[in-house]
Amino acid sequence: MANNSAKKNEKSIKSTVIYVQVVVFGLILWFMAFNSMWLIDGTLSIWSYLLCTAVSTLSYGCYKQILKCWELQLPPEAAEYYIDVLAVNCIVHLLDPFTSKIWYYLVYSGTFTGFSLFL
Image 1 (cartoon, rainbow, N blue to C red):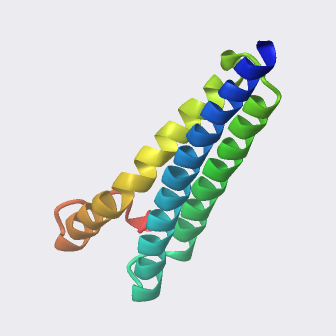
Image 2 (spheres, rainbow, N blue to C red; image 1 turned 180 degrees about the vertical axis):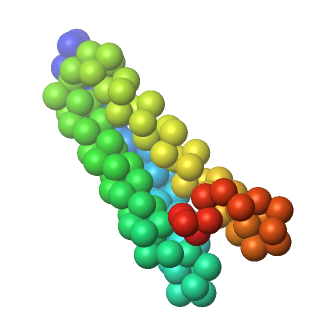
């Protein structure tokens, strides 16, 4: 009886892992594709691109740590920190192409002069 329950839990975790993997890797590809396009276009500095790469690497590391916590069947509290960091990074991945364009227009239109070193 307990063996069937373990198999059911494993099947449930597998479907969740596949869903999380598709979402996380899709957002990382979205994020890096748009930032690569702006790097090639010349509107993004190499330092900003390296920061984008660091955020993407952190997201991948959090994803791997969450999987490790689930594989070892640790309590849910063990992966909470990684899930929180991954959620914030996913929001950044999703919204960055839109907010970067807004910052670009504000800085180069003369409306906003701060943070121009990072663009």
